[in-house]
Amino acid sequence: MDSIDGPRAKIVWSDNASPSDVDLVDIYQLPKAGAPATVKAGDYVITKRSSGTNWEGAQVTMVSPGVVTVKYVSDLEEANLPPEKVIAASPAAAADIKANAASTEFLKKAQAHTPQSPAGYKPKVGDHIFGPWTSTSWFGGKVKSINGDKALIEWEGVKPDEADLDKIIPYPTAENSATPAVDDYVLVKPSSGSWDYAQVTAVNGSEIEVRDAEGKTRTVKPGEFVLLK
Image (cartoon, rainbow, N blue to C red; front, top):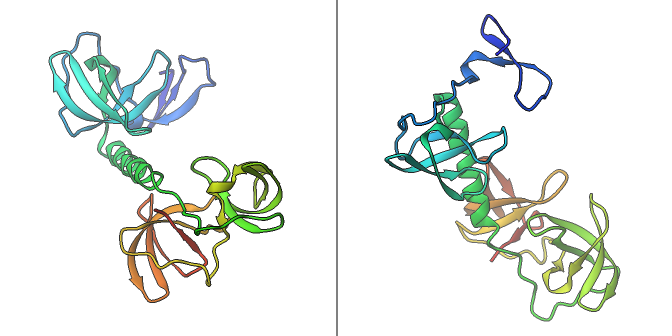
């Protein structure tokens, strides 16, 4: 800490990044080596994951002498850490970490499901299709060419790339849209970019209410979502 000015302090970072002002409420004192744990199972905390300078959010799953077991928010992996690598988060920071954990868990469950191609469907050059640009990013696109079991796709919003033929489905329309059930996972059409993972919370005729990874709800209609199985 270089200086304090009211509710903010100027921090000189140990990784040689440019100094910056930080709210005092977001500044924590580093625990001393060998200090006992001050957290308990269920707490949301800030942890030092590796030998680098970054700290990240996690949830404590178990505390034992000299060891704090945590589950990281970013990928839900667990690790055993010494108490000096675990800091109790402020109530506001803990709320953010909890929300991020819920989002990560939601996406992990949703991404275990994929769109299903209709029986016998074989995309052709020129077809308007829907498919994976990456394992978790789905876009609409147009088939430019087919080579063996792959198709070169001119994606909507991202650069052209290949996709496996067996992962491509017809582009969703009101006519080919399947009716989901409550709790089904879907991909919903965004204003731009990759389609969003969501879960169905209500079905009212042709109107489908869904909740996304951030807990926000919206209503979509056939042609604006893809059912995941």
